[in-house]
Image 1 (cartoon, rainbow, N blue to C red):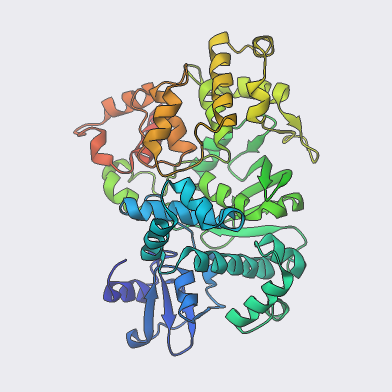
Image 2: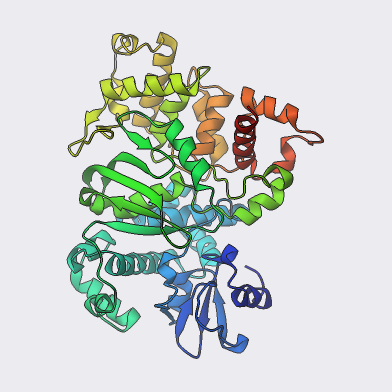
Length: 476
């Protein structure tokens, strides 16, 4: 984190680039704020700076009710340094509820390190131990649900990760000096629908992001246009199997997207929130990206790298898209879902199916694939990919060792460098992924004058790819 003088200048300027990247505790009021808080700027002598909301609360500060720290943008696309990147991955696992299910030992195992090392690394990055961070994240999610929805307090508690209603009430009162019901009394009435705001650091090029997803949407699973994105959702969370639909659209005010979801997904809310953030790349820090990309990024400020809601789904889409047009790949994906997917209980005219599970694809026959127009070689790749995931040989979620995952992917017959890099770019959320064998990328780079090659764009080469693709489309 920057020194206190620089942080105070960012606070005075209400600089949105730093929103969610630090928090300020005000000793004269006992509250902590986001750097964009509209309240009068406190004196520098009264300010204490923290790398996370959890650190501010651990120091005894309460969240500001004007700027609402619980709604700040979460994460960064590529924190500076390997240690910070690993800490961010661990924080994402905590945000998704993994700590509640598996504890510190489970997260450390996923990260490939000892619990002691993880605790030390995490504390340096966030100012608190993982257990304190997890507790604060549960409380802040509960605070959001109390403020932004009409969910009963009991549903709020359990959706936020609390296993005991009594513990939830006691901790909420201890930390915030009021009961959950007291907080809700001071908030405006909300509609019945379950809608939450997801903040981002501006700018965000919503139009290009939404059209990219719409153009590649899988019929039956996804639908969208410039105004919104909709999809079906399947989750396994805390021993429960959940299914439903969600919709994402730009918020009418502020730098945020609105997420509307079926109540059937409430039991997996932490996981849904994390996946949506990754899909829309809401952890991006545009100023850092555009500083490195320079003139390449200037015509399209705020362009993001679309992620993936589900890693297996994205990998299947990548395999189906090998050496054919986007339109043809979309058609194949629609047939694939209609054959192997399940009908969504809450289906509508556009979103009708759940994407197939790896277990179903692993057991599919060549005849089933042939009837869809999928070649035998591509079918073998899909079956091998599904079996690898069923056998847990690797994961297609963002993880600590991207190179190892890329190597494992390319051991599957039919998965070459382009497919692996595309999966890394979207499913693994790797900001430096670069499918250099992509014909469009090659053509776009040939048109650039004076370029020094892709090395100049590290560690943001995935963003460079998006600018190259978009630039080529605009020229044509």
